[in-house]
Image (tube, rainbow, N blue to C red):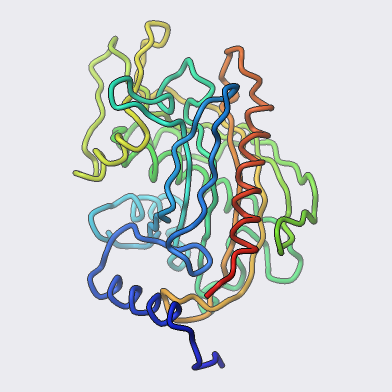
Length: 317
């Protein structure tokens, strides 16, 4: 039974979530019961500067359209139709865009092409799921990589690029799980802050990109109305290159991440949940430029570890 004694901050936080749920406010998520977090940041002369936001974005994955976006239902119908609802929370960083020059997120000549890094909290109801998301069960701590492939594909193809404006049919082309994805457990027990994580890699995940060429008649759409404009501003408009004549080309990605789970009380849903926490970075394996891709990935991982350590040791109210 949870203690009735709570701090003023906890009380105000609960009031916020009650109002949020009553009004159906979209996209305002949480990470470890916080909706304002310490985002990962990268600012170097070697790799460039990342965007960052302390706001957690939430997208419910369920058999209905939630708020103004339908990406959660699309993902549910493709990947999780046989599963109870999933709450997807994310705080991410990508290449810092320019209002005048666009962004390198959709620039196929850049090492930032289709790259983002940050962290997820993925919540499932303990009364409806018999295991945490991303794990085979709640005893062995063995990863269920197929969950992770699905959520990675969901994020790139639909939560990022579909909302960004990539046509649905182009996103769906790369929705099947690739048979040649390579996975590896790097370390079964890595301590970051106060917690122990599994460190793992998945390489060969093929997904759609937001690149738009001037050589075909394709363009970005407003798949989710005003939010598509918000996404295009956050990621930056595409940069065209004569070397790439087709829009929405695929990219082959590598994910390097730290993952753990816990069973804990969720202030938003007001019940116990299985919560899976994932920190990680990505690189585009198709990139052929002069930047050291692996060094770029390590810089991302250092940034997310710093973020994780900062939040782990920050006093919780």
